[in-house]
Image (tube, rainbow, N blue to C red; front, side):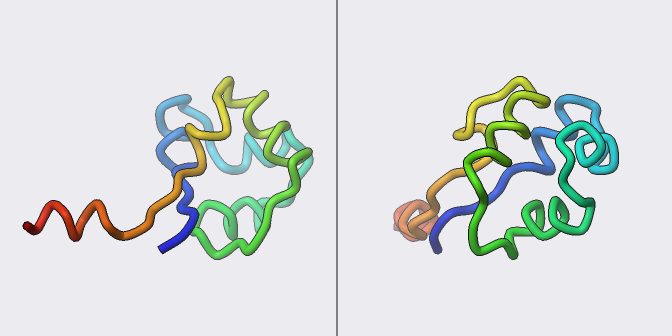
Length: 76
């Protein structure tokens, strides 16, 4: 599976819209939307740092590794 994104959950927990985050970090809504939907192929550390600073979170709160084995093990 690879790296998955939980940006939408963190935004919801913080009560912040994608538009507000975009304005605060200086990243376009389109680029944040690509990240949020998991379609991004990469993210700059400076962008990740800015997002984490504004959302008062750690990178692991937004990104996680999904190897697909969790759901496979749950089925056993």
